[in-house]
Amino acid sequence: MRLATALLALLLLTGASSAAPEREAERAEIAGVISNVIGWAKTKDLDLFYGSIANDEDYVSVTPGARVIKRFEDVKQNVPFWMSPDFKYVRHELKDLEITFARCGTVAWFFCVLDDINTWKGEPASWENARWTGVVEKRDGKWVVVAQHFSFAKND
Image (tube, rainbow, N blue to C red):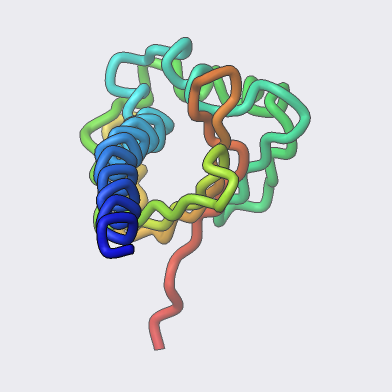
């Protein structure tokens, strides 16, 4: 009986230890995708951006501005602004990024504080200390952002 218990414990430990590095690799991949949603602007690589978000009706992006982007096709309306030579990426940073996996393993949600530093016509056009939450889904073996929300804390 002790041998069976010891073998079961060993199997459970071995399974858990091999799953942990796999989960951390997934977490790193997701972190890269999240960063690419902003970082693509450094080189104005639209393919990188489009590959980081859901390219369908499920995509939604809520920002502090009045307009809510409710599908991938709506994203394209902002392309002239981002691709303009007047818009310049300076840097971005994701602080305190937390990624939590759903039990199914193909969905996760995230939270971080974002610094997205840019200029427009030489003037600051930045978001500093923006709260960023979102949902990622693994589709066809690749993680993409399906929903995201940006907000700023109210200063009391």
